[in-house]
Length: 216
Image (cartoon, rainbow, N blue to C red):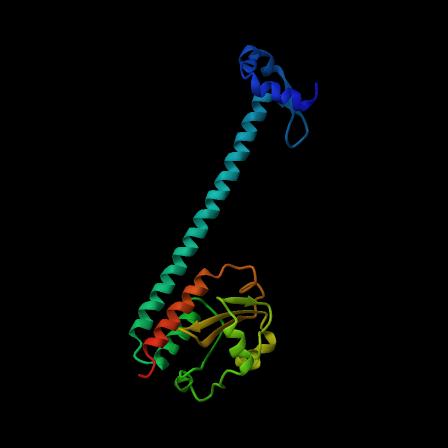
């Protein structure tokens, strides 16, 4: 008989294990990690232990992810409350930069605004070029990259040459009016395959706060 036929027979006749329980207790099979033969019952116990360890590892991973998500949510909540308290666009931009730097440890942050918002930026900030505006207009959500996009490298000054990962978060109302750019020397801080749910929420919160203060 082929192995597949034996397996099919045992699956269709579970009473075999009851009828031949003594024989099964005497069957010796290779240890999963080599070295010696062990009873089939011991092999089953080892399999259950290995399965239990895998489940415990998976559960621990899920708990860690949950704790990380809770921490991020709490930080976003603090930022939202601070943005609600901002009385003008300048104050909102300060809150945004402060919280991203202090709470989220983002080392390099740049914001550029347009469509009537640019007057609220500090005088030392250059306006966004046409390439950056076109890039922003084409974004459906946050975008992460290993290199600076469009003409945004200059936004980070002398640090630009050392940056290895970037996240771009569009700021929009009915139309895009700005771009939040985050960058790091760590190539794994922002990468194309990473989830962007919290970056999207960050963009929505920041855009809402800036729109609320427009003209004040």
